[in-house]
Image 1 (spheres, rainbow, N blue to C red):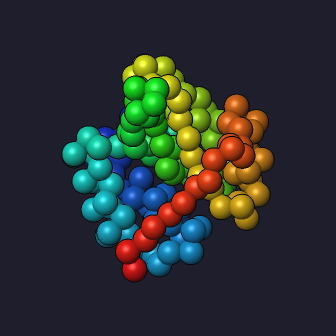
Image 2 (spheres, rainbow, N blue to C red; image 1 turned 60 degrees about the vertical axis):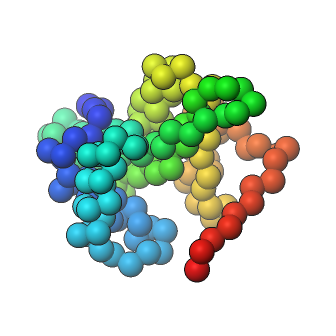
Length: 148
């Protein structure tokens, strides 16, 4: 298993996985837009994207993190926004390895932590995250405002 920071060299296989990820969350398939979105994130440097590969050098999954800041702790805070492993490669440790790489990023950037959100119906994710050290924050309310 190999994990590395994504570059434009991996844009096509990453776009395919990202498109599959969006489909998992009931969004319309749009490979071209997925590629454009990821290209912008990589070129602008406004996200950290890590990709993993199997022993045949096939991309098996990715995680994408966005930088935020905690005013009360006066430190960087990372949002683990996306984590996806292709269904053919699940239960082989790729998700855990990607999360561990995200934790390493937190340490490298002297961040105070990392948080994520997942749907209550995401059974796999809701079992995975506690196993990797995440805890459910029951002391805060999460509010959202959308432009429709």
